[in-house]
Amino acid sequence: MLCIMGAFLNQPNQDPMNAQEKKAIDWKSLGFEYTKTDYRFSALYENGQWSEGELSTDEFLHLHEGSPALHYAQQCFEGMKAQTSKDGRVLLFRPQMNCQRMQNTSDRLSMPRVPEELFLHGVKEAVRANINWVPPYGSGASLYIRPLLIGIGENMGLRPAKQYMFRVMVSPVGPYYKTGGLSVIKLAVSDFDRAAPHGTGDVKAGANYPGGLYATRKAQELGANEALYLDAAERRHIEEAGSANIIICTRDNKLITPRSAAILPSITRRSIMDIARQELGMETEERAIDLRAELDSFVEVAACGTAAVLSPVGKIWFDDAWHSFYGEGEEVGPVMQQLYDLLCQIQSGEKEDNFGWTMEVPM
Ligand SMILES: *Cc1c(COP(=O)(O)O)cnc(C)c1O
Image: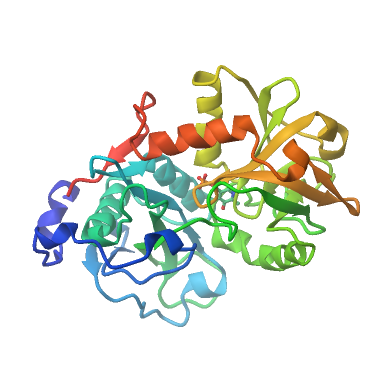
């Protein structure tokens, strides 16, 4: 029974007084890197059933060499963050959405769904057990949470795995882009495609990402932070960056974002569109956006995602030239600044959460 699972877990032996003693880390200088924390959560799927799951101190996995995750990339992941509020609570942001997306991804990859109860339990346990690693309020850092679902066990041919592991690892992180904080980034349109029109671009399958490593390197050689992908069929419409969706504030003060079946539906982006509409009274549109034909109407551009939060895009490279947006591409525009502030205030519990988006991790 999932509801009494806690009783069976290997509970970390934590002195409650110690529980609030944060690790001696310079939180402000953290980048987006892996830091080994004390515990991770994992559960196994075998014979059609999920185990209750448990915490462990071992960051290594012992896997069968035939595991389908290793040969055929039958695996997927999620990304989310926990933050400390001013009054010391630890908040998750819309974790049910991550669970739902992981379930959609599992369906597409012929993997069993992680039930919502197990998903949320694993996430909360991993955060709670590593409470000393959750960056303090105001540090600018957060605890990144990485749920993972992998097909494991003996196998040779191309077929779904018989066993699966659901794992949740966490690591304190700082800003995703090296520029840090809310600073302006640059994107370069890639000569490569991220996802096919009817492929797996709309699910968070690990297989979508290694092809982008080369595209990112090419973008960085041009002086950009990240690649920007256009639609694979026509190479006209904006899709997204390597790990972030795109939002654009147009000259008529609309917030627009690309609609495409090949884009990963970002929870951050969907939240920002809601904030723009309900808090700023902006008109919002999700539609195909033709980069070259509509460029002149773009005032402010940004990339958004759990890792990137909201990163204003100052310049985009394509057709052999840089194209600049707000403030010659050097400044953060007022709309993106407002959206960033509102999003961060809701996520950190500073602003009243009228949307009901945050979930407290019980300690
Ligand atoms: C994870 C991811 C995003 C961001 O999604 P969020 O739910 O906002 O974290 C955007 N694009 C890609 C390709 C991603 O993998």
